[in-house]
Length: 252
Image 1: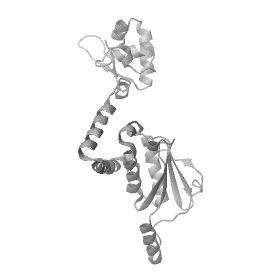
Image 2 (image 1 turned 120 degrees about the vertical axis):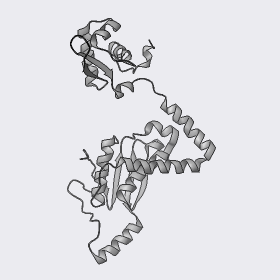
Image 3 (image 1 turned 60 degrees about the horizontal axis):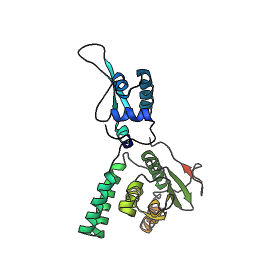
Image 4 (image 1 turned 180 degrees about the vertical axis):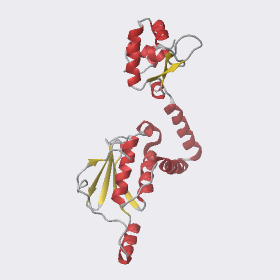
């Protein structure tokens, strides 16, 4: 068997052994107890804990003889506790692309990736004025794991992200990954200007984007206002006061 150092260090000895014995094969509690050398009731307790943590799942399987048996397998999440070297492969890939095609080509490539990601990220129709759209954007960001907050300062909006879900590849791609966030905001908010005040990719504790209507949008807004009602009405609801930050949960 491979060294126990392969499994995640936060797992205790017995649970680590169970995980390693389920790597590459399914097993029932009797087989695991025999393999690890402890009684079946103890194995079952550990399996229940691992299942609650989402590391293993169970199902009943019928055999030619006897009653159906409860079989345990690793989940996709459970497999992630074992070593992965994807970052090393990405590092070679990024370096090779830059060496062969140059920094400009790498930036163009990341721009195309950002646009495609933005298309895939926006899983529902976004409607309403700018404030409503940004609120829905923050919901999507939170659903994805960014821990985002929305606030308003004067006529500008502020989005803070306290977690970067791409942080593990920042050493490979740097601020190129910020184009993904920027393109998502542009996709949802249309004609806006984005000013980055802080970036996790630059070593800051969080990402802060200041969002305001672009000059083109302002000109169009003034023209539309002289003809009909303007498109956006920036009336802050009670839940979004100037300078006040709140978390938007959900996404439904």
